[in-house]
Image (cartoon, rainbow, N blue to C red; front, side, top):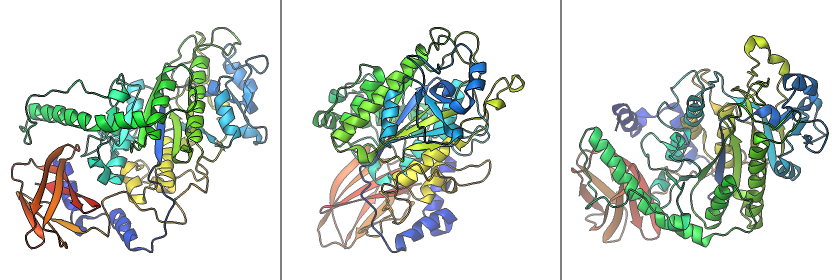
Length: 542
């Protein structure tokens, strides 16, 4: 464990070390409690449009169609003919009049149901136009100016680690990624790294790991070296994969799909997600991926023709999402799922002469689901901003991408202010995203940020029966509580969620003393079983 992380964690174990935000969050546990709607099954589904989606040919600004046509004389979406744009909503004001790409028929259908919102001009303050760097910035929660909010950790990992600490020891992954050949940086947390699993090229009904088969029992201690770190990573990955396998397979087999999905890779990914949700898998965040949006050429197949590479990608996206939402609605699951699309950047306002577009900055987001308040947020981008002097870039950001995610994490999933500040914080302006939420994003009947105090699915529970002390500890630690039982059952997991110890011990004067000198320094989770009640305590060994 990194020294800076240990200092931070050990300080947080005492009241003196609490920050004002942590104190504020702790005080909420003593406030009158007003029950919120059940949010225990709510989930987010993120769709990565990899390559940099062309926002202007996705969402056409109709109030500036003449300027748009001059910037894109050969690749523009036609104003007439078989493949003309789809008029989204004639009741919107002039500066929000949008023409959807003709491929987005499924999105239009969701919008008409009031289940889709378009966010205009999404990006971050200092946009990087490199694929890998910008993707990393999106996944770590940074803004192109400062690395203070997660140089080597992801915002999803930070969020899950702080909001769902009790669930780290469960037999299912907190997050699942499909469609990429490696686990995303976005799921990498500060301490508990085993928060996600990648199902790419795996059969969810018979999930397995190619790492399976490390000889002998896995070690508890690891050498303090690069070799030790690599061995620990492999051992934990092997253990977690085997732990998750049964839950994933069981949920897949238990779940079902009630609609016919299109025949595409993205559709198959979302079909799997729907089936796992249908099978009651406890996973909270899913991320899927459709690539190919780096459309430097052949974006359209000919002058004035909307058909081409970009149309095909958007068609797969729209049709897959529509089938996914219809599947969830048919199974009475749609109330608990919100999805969104994101891309690492947009494209230039001007075409490039190869029937394509080059790397740009801002791009629209689509947020969808039954809980989403349908509509449009923001105005059409000002195309007069794109000139030869700035290389035809649209640079004005109307919505920071972190505003969208922070709003969903709090208003839909129920995270408190302290968790949001741990997940995202604008270090450039020293401003909290709790003050920058997009209030019209979630319908009022689903929004739990006002009118009630959501019970966090976290370890801070005023009704806990057991105390684990001292915390931090060196060699020995005690588990004590008020109990008439003669024995206590407990499990100890490392920060990655790998089970290290499972025992039942006799209670002497209401407590048991454990000698754990052989464990390495780091973070551990103690799961204590008392009758039908289960408690999880986060403990630091120094």
